[in-house]
Image (cartoon, rainbow, N blue to C red):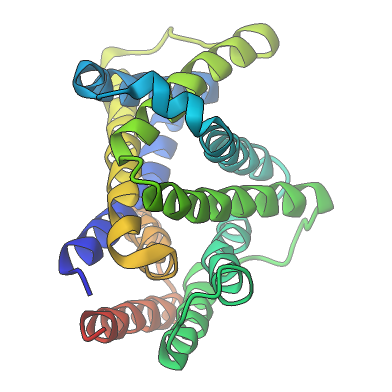
Amino acid sequence: MNILGIIFALAAGVFFGIIGPVTKTAYNLGAGVGLAIFLRYIVALLIVAPLIPYQKNLLKTYKENLSNFLLITIASIMLTTGLLISVTYINVSLTIIIFCTYPVIVLTISIFITKEKIKNLIKFLFVTTFFGLFLALSPSSESLKVQGIIFALIASLGASIMIVTNQTMSQKNISPIQINIFINFFNTIFFFLILSIFFKIDVDISFNTFLILLIPSFSYAIALFLQLLAIPRIGQTNTALFLYLEPITGIFGAVLILNEQLSSIQLLGTAIVLISLAASTLVTRKV
């Protein structure tokens, strides 16, 4: 197994996990959701834009594989909007629990659709990791609204489609940079139009708040690129498994940044996830 791919996937999980607690900090300081979303994509686009002139046959690649590029982009929109709307109906912990079913969806697709050969031990580690995650997040059973659950599932489905489609595209020798350019260019325009017409992009915040908001924006750009790099190296199933580090990073971020407290059950769940991920690393390195 490609050790670099494992590192990319784990690092992607860490950077994705940073986004939640730091963004919430910015919200607490007066930043709006609209600005957070738009800044996420414009920063990612500005980072990848200098690489555009060095991409050979870029427009030809987009034209010949337009359906794949549109599918992975629509999936990214499902992910972003699903999470954003879900947390307005149900609590954040439950949203993350439902959203983090996406590695299980990827595993199911890998087994029954793409017929990927997966060790029984890896399947077992998926289950133990998800169980540990459930304990770590300890969701409340209060205020369960169907709309929130549906939108969280939409986000989970979007994440699954992104990972599976990315592997299909990598098999066609489509580079992560080409995918990154398309997703962020399309989504920057899409969300700018949607937010401008139906919502508001409030830029009236302090400079320090703006700097804090840049952290999750850069984290998203880095995490997406690392995920795109990981999938061609270790496959969609292993990448999905290692991305379980994302919510654990979010938990530690909430403790360190937002001063939230962990219960003994949450600590147990966190330990189970970390042990499962460590075991997964050892197993996949031997493949």
